[in-house]
Length: 215
Image (cartoon, rainbow, N blue to C red):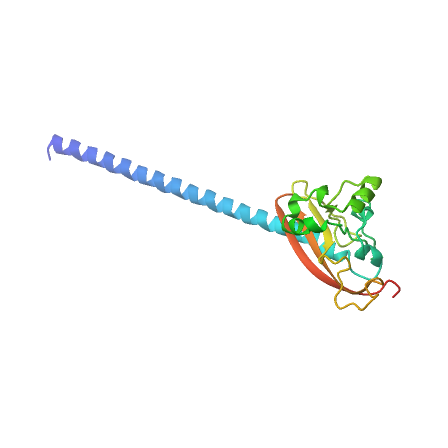
């Protein structure tokens, strides 16, 4: 074999080695991009699950506040004092909901876009009561459904909630005979809003059957 032929073979080996190295580099880069994408997808799914759990927990407390026959008038009439941070959960179950009084012409907007809620949504008497009590809230901070348990709020995505009567007719009772609604008897429907910071909002509806203030 001549010297020229040997030199040509050495050059071919170098060229093949460089091509193989380039292919391996491209494969490694493609693999790294795939891993990065999968990591982002997993992180987004984990965050979405976290936000769902936070907002859902807020809804559960909003619903929990209506359980039981106690404080029935607070469950039928909106009172600004009940939307104060001092409205904590009680171990005896005699809890009060944060029931908002929304202007009728703003009700649909509030239901569709609760995250844009401002004090312009509230009825005048509710605003006056709120102003007298020095209460700046439309949303109640989540405290959990177990008064004895300690809850740790996530400062990035705090859980908050509120509720409204789900029908426009003041006392949202079904098939109530004359005078029954005044006594707090009948089936009442509520719409609850829960949120995880400003990242996610959830809504739920529930119905409660009350036997009356004196029962």
